[in-house]
Length: 198
DNA sequence: CACAGGATCGTT
DNA sequence: ACGATCCTGTGT
Image (cartoon, rainbow, N blue to C red; front, side, top):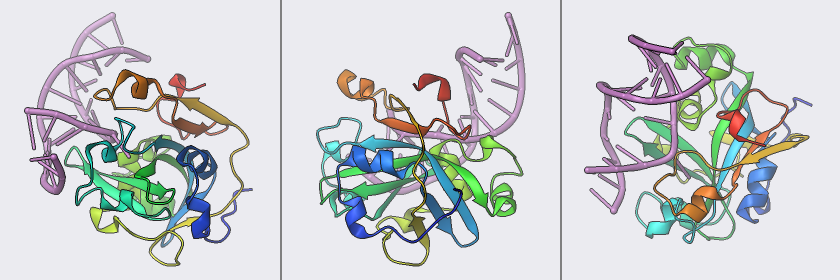
């Protein structure tokens, strides 16, 4: 049930981005004593997806996204928030944004990092997740299939998924704004903008 | 519950 | 100039 298993192998990440996104819900992220269970994600479907950072070509910032799956892409948003993405596929410019998670272990540490707040407000939203894990862009390019540092661990996938449009991409083309690339655990309250999902 | 506004900075 | 956001404050 709520049990993280071992690291996922590199091949696990080198599949279609939507497939990996759905499969990530219910898996675990660990950094030191903090263990989180992933409850909400978004797929960014490569250079042809106008909401994806790779739609504007290769830059030093998005370089990890152009590499093989199984690595982190961390970037700074609004000058404040460090967003965690999981690169997928085989150097296709695709990645999954981790939006929300549930605390499994290390709640005291997370609360300290999150201004002493409690409950789902701790971790529903990608900026909050970055705070909870104390991330910085130094983690961009980090490998998830080798032990140490920031790890993604296996576990039972979510029983049922909710699905909907992505958040905060109003600058994208209408077709990409509408795309239902956001996935969340139907059984969890640790999900942002839950009413917009079905 | 629904807004509005400020914080803050690397990338383009 | 702007953004894959968060928090606080105000009003209903």
